[in-house]
Length: 164
Image (tube, rainbow, N blue to C red):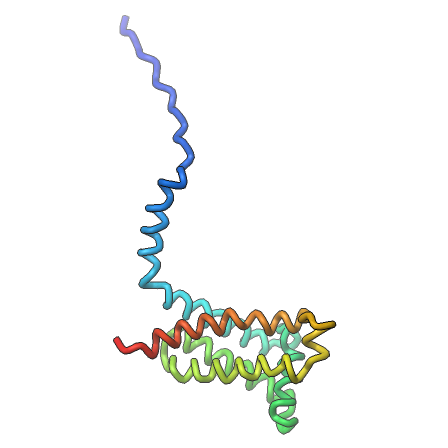
């Protein structure tokens, strides 16, 4: 009769130590580094495209009311809201598409900074809507979060304007 040996019981592998994760993180960072600006540009473009598209759907954008109020003040009331909102949405969509594709990127970045000037002007033009006792309201926070988009586009601009 043949003797069978018992199968060895598997021993659980130990949890990775911090020391073993460091090389893995370094490899991941080195893999990501050459793609990081493209990822930043594309993700910012996607955000702009989506937020612009929301402005084309009545009441879908949480910023619709503030955008119309601020833009009306910036244009001295010369353009009615039924023209302002679709124009603003179209501009945001065009900026988003340019960031996504990289086509006409320099023009899109210029439009982006002009747009952000208007967005941040709302903090001064609409103080009652943007601030409550010195703290930003929900609308004010919605505007202030754009600091991250500006930082992203500054990195994209620096890359775009750096000679290769």
